[in-house]
Amino acid sequence: MNNENNFKVPHIIGIKNMTEDYIQSILDEAFLIKRNPSKYTEELKGKILSLAFWEASTRTRLSFESAILRLGGRTLGFSSQVGTSIEKGESLSDTITMLAGYSDCIVLRHPRRGSAKLAARVADKYGVPVISGGSGSQEHPTQALLDIFTIQEFHHRLSGLNVGIVGDLRYSRTISSLLFALSKFGRNTIYYLSHPSLKLQEELEYDLNSVDLELTKAESLSDMIGDLDVLYVTRLQKERFPDPMLYNKVKGSYQIQKDILKAAKSDLIILHPLPRVDEIPYSVDSLPQAKYFEQAKNGVYTRMALLKKVMKFNLNK
Amino acid sequence: MKEKNSNDKQLIVKKINNGIVIDHIASGGSFYVLKALNIDENFPHSVFVAMNVPSKKLGRKDVLKIRNLRKDDLNLDVLGLLISGSNLVCIENYLVVHKEKIKTPKKAYGIIKCPGLSCITNLRENVKTEFDIIESNGKKEDIKLRCVYCDKMFDIHKHISLIV
Image 1 (tube, chains in turn brown, yellow):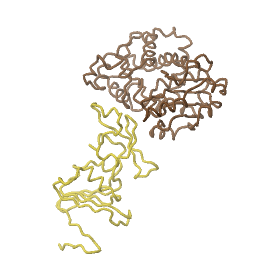
Image 2 (cartoon, chains in turn orange, brown):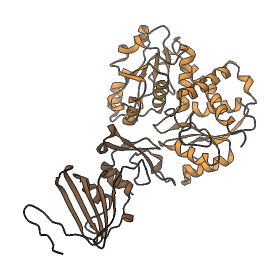
Image 3 (tube, rainbow over the protein chains, first blue to last red):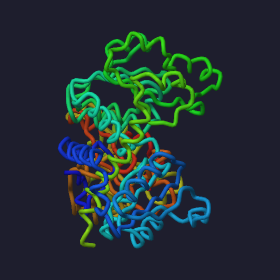
Image 4 (cartoon, one colour):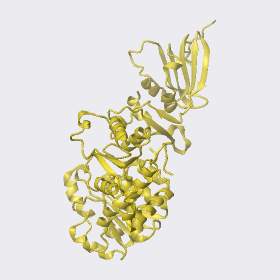
């Protein structure tokens, strides 16, 4: 189950409160869809999905759009605050109330932590499910679903894995959700490489203390590369560093150079939630380990599975 | 009735006719209660504060007597987060009309703003704050609040000014 607040309809707020079974059921459905997507073209015919993006997005918004179109539904929404009443000061609650009247499901991305939960509480009154497309630095659950879908696709398992995580542990909602997701399946070990000013948030550390996930600090990329099944790279955001000089000084330590991958296992996969800046050079793209574009493509199948699961619940509305 | 007088061994505080007494406050807790109740130099009634006095039960304790305050003027959830385990006594016409032990609430609703700077509840939203209570190792002194929206964990004693 994925129902933390006695909601009337299912909402996807975060991975933290999802069960392993619920996650696996979405992945299983996504595998079936990927094998034969044309079978699902009438699945959500006549249904409308709201895409409410207070923040910029390329992959999340467009893959949700692709997913609903492939399921026979349609979209409405906005991709920035420009041109909407939010510019005039309209609240999140009012915007969600309005969208609940216009559509059958709402995907939102908002810069504030807690935004998905508040939206779910508002929309639940109207029987409309909410899916988080990212809530501040808190969680990005659908990204984690497509991440672990890709891991399962290549490694055929989601436990007993060594996963290296490089980049911003503190502000990356993607990493928070991925860590929660990997913790559900057991016996996974995380090797992390991050600047001390970007270490895990206290709250996330607290949550991870009580789950089956081993966290090990790595000193360098070369230190961990030989042990890894998955290398998950995230973008370092210059503005998160207290000093831009420091960013320029350390960014090289987090770059994935071709040479370093020579020491990697043959079945290592490299993932990145994208967009990348310079943490993975273009020269890596042609290596067999580079799976980040396949990963991005999987966003469509996992989001199709998710929409089918969540919006089918609502078919009698 | 003969009034007792203070001497160098005992400090006798005059009985109050109407008001509240909070006894067995863990040492230092009265400071937080006064702040939470907004009791400052402009407060119109008498307030007796005994801080860090010897106690058989606690070793050291604080005691508060506040005239003309009633139970209804208090938010027991706030007190439960600040001074759980203390005893509240309500007095009317020199008689004890109510007694209760102050308990830690299971959840806290709308009593404090969330200190999480990026929490959605700090935007102009029509939403009541809501917090889970986390007692580390079951110790009352290590109580933390956790925002159900943004997950921020914090010690209420460090954010008294956010109490609403």
